[in-house]
Length: 422
Image (cartoon, rainbow, N blue to C red; front, top):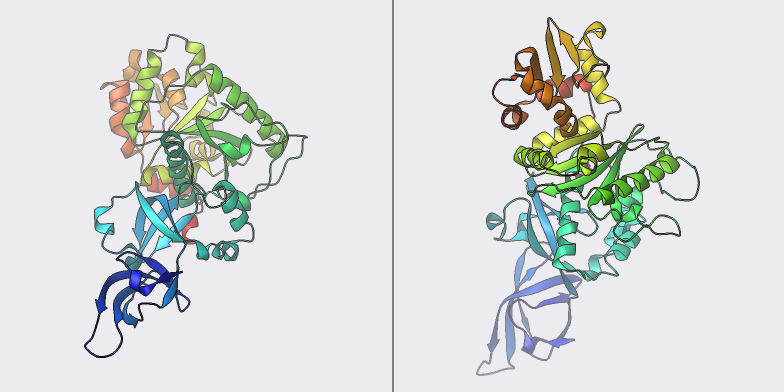
């Protein structure tokens, strides 16, 4: 307990069923009568400010406040959304709760949020298993970890925020449980992202400590499993042998739990298309071709962390979306169906047409040699945001044809939902 006579600015305490923070106080000793403490205090939950006088000896219960690093995502309809980097839950706050600080905070930056520990039971209201999951992942509401560990959590949080905005389920307590003991496929009714650190814990035998360290998770959609990585604003330098073992272990998990025969595809998240370009140029200098990412995963879909990337994620969540799109774009007699001597999708009037609408940079590596040497007979389909990157990588002579990304979304009809709005 703390006496009102010991009030100080910033102190938080419980009073009459609410949590207050001292904004301003003054010790008053009138000529007649008892001394008192005139206090201006703010309701932490509502932001409302009230004034009250306390007897200096009157005692109040200090509020149990935890401070936690979170990522500010965006503002929508008057609410400010933050991402918990440990549990990956989304937290909406009102203007009163963020006070005057929000004008100085940019999207996708870290901030410190103060939590009243007594409010934790509200997680049970969100979902019966949410509280247990939260306490497990935060080690009973504590937040240890090195800067390196926090950076990794930040990478995971970015990917999960992208997935939730694309309508992909990521909350572990809502996903079917996986195991590593027998062939027992579960039914995934929607596109689902499983965290790498949860996959690592499967069964009685945990995987090697370094396994799944670079991978942030695995996206399951239809009969396809994508290994997911987030390189943020750095060039992705694949470690070769380690990633090959990770791919093999993920394949075992996918076979046992989702009926996926092989994991041959990956998703690479990055800050912008420039990161994709630098990653490709770095791969060109790799001394060991067998360890390059395009030999570990035959398909690597680059997803920029912006609104275009969210649309592309929606495409990936549709089973066989690329085949559906190619069927829309070309007649059957024009399509290659992967039977050509090099990578292309259709042949029309002497022109080889390659579609980069799938954002597959591994496939692009295989297409480039022919495109550069036969630029007059090649045409590349792309979205507008991909054009500068492709021009730099393929050169000025290869013809680029723009396709409207919104038209593709309308044709494919992926469900446009945002799990933050549920």
